[in-house]
Length: 106
Ligand SMILES: [Zn+2]
Image (cartoon, rainbow, N blue to C red):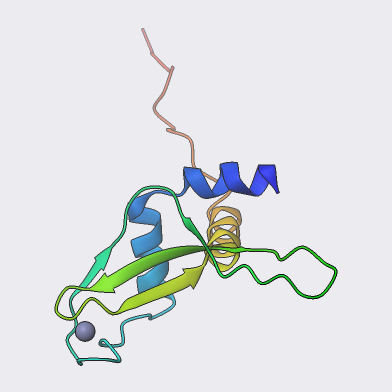
């Protein structure tokens, strides 16, 4: 999973905010009902590792935010965020080059 970790570290704060807005993750805090979220910056953290009998548990990387009022934590699975970003970059893949570049008429 080394590659996916590098991809996760490349996700910017703004990209995560874009993700939240586009998937409409705008619900108020389920604990207190306030609508003020603080996004935790830095690398995504790893969550929930369960070792089932005989197999090593696998963690799930998450992007988290917490309620500014009561501190309740909301997490989004990093693979979902990554997939959304990849789909978005494919959608905007055909970028338009500047048509004015490099033409002079004497
Ligand atoms: Zn709250």
